[in-house]
Image (cartoon, rainbow, N blue to C red; front, side):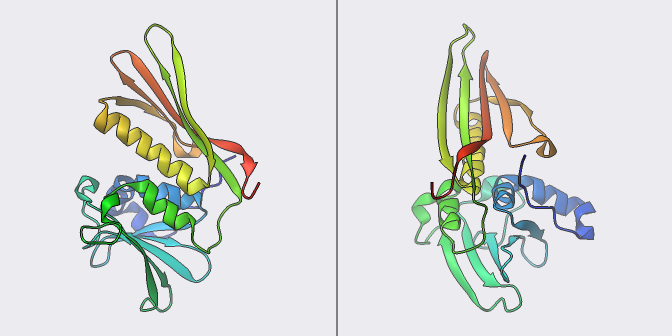
Length: 208
């Protein structure tokens, strides 16, 4: 059974721009939702991702100047935790934009989610595992991954894995499991080679 935060409840969910940005930044939004936080795209002034942590504070994820319409233009992330009722009260948690202290991490998801996972904030106790199975045309199968991680890290790792296969290794995504049907799973293909990247529930619990 998946544990995914609900979608935000507002009329903008039917707005084409909101839908486009929500889908474009799916790789950032989905790991946040697996941490149990309702996550939204703010269209006022500059585009931002906002995740309600549930304790009166929220995370704001953007770049130097909001979010570009094309996520390929992101050069780094800036993550701020702020008071929802008093946004002036805030703390910069992570900054990998050019010139930021974590600039060497660029737009990578895993360093950002490692910092988010370290927050003193409500988060699920269950663990997830990201792994990939590669099947060669002649039938040899190999599997990579399998570490038990927090939900945010495991789902972020899934997206980074898929991105690496498509952007760096030339795989094409041929199928992806619909969100409502279970944990993330994608099938990719390249010259007869099949890669299946998946997230599964770990048998370990946090602190075990």
